[in-house]
Amino acid sequence: MSKVAHCHLRPRCGVRARRLSTVGAVVVLVVVGSSVPARGQDDAVQGESRDRFFLGGAFLVSSTLGATEDPAGYGFLRPYFHGSVESAAVGAVLNGGFFVERQGRWSVGAEIALRRAQSATVSEETRSKFEFWRLSALYTERERLVSVVARLDAVRRARVTLQPMGGLTVSQSTKALTNRHGWYEYPGGQLPIERPDRQVDANRVGFLGGADLLFHLGREASITCGVRAHWVPRGEPPSSSSGHEMPSTGPLVLQISAGVRWSPSR
Image (cartoon, rainbow, N blue to C red; front, side, top):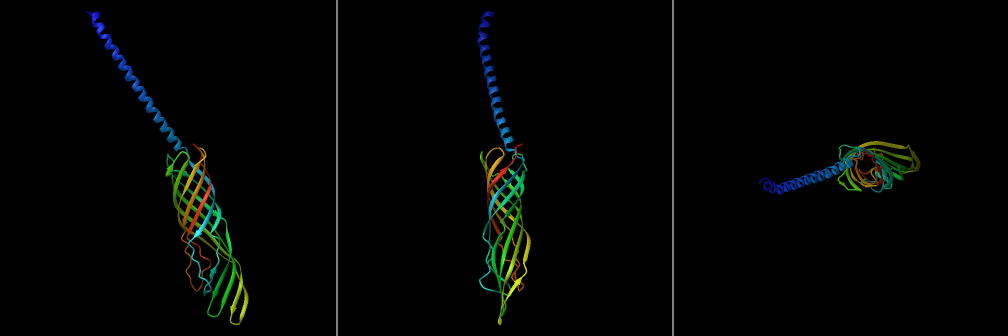
């Protein structure tokens, strides 16, 4: 009787053992499979959070737009300026910043844009009821833009990153009129005249918007191409009997740059 019972129970034991081994194999596969994505996610997070700060530099082409031109002819009791500097000038931009979250999508920093001084010969022409003043002068314009910028990695791929940005800009500009000489005309004749040099320094606060496109060369270095638009209210003095001192400058500064960026790994 015991042999018969033993023979009938052996197949059930084999089936149970196979079921246990199958369940164990499934558990092992689930654990291993879940650990691989988790490790991949950890590696991805570590890869994204490896950057702490960045430094960069680029060459740029800068152009100022929106200036109000004086009309042709003499200005009545105030000078009209005829002539202006070239609209585009070369320069350089230096920037840096740090990342404010672990994934490295947001960053804040600063940048300074310098452009070559621009010069041109201009004329100053003024008249009263019976008198005329015509001067020739060398007009020189310099400007430095210092900006505080926030950036976002809006599009991030393996080799390319798009970073829109925005912030505040401080314009530090210098305008100068030198070598001012010409003629004073009156009903009885004319006389040669000279005027002292004149310089105006101004600091203005404005806004910045733009974007950078990064082409990653490796884990730390990138080639950057950028576009900036600075809006700087100039606050030019109104026309009056005392005249305005300098040619007007437009409020919109457009910049296109290309350079490199370096961000060390953790």
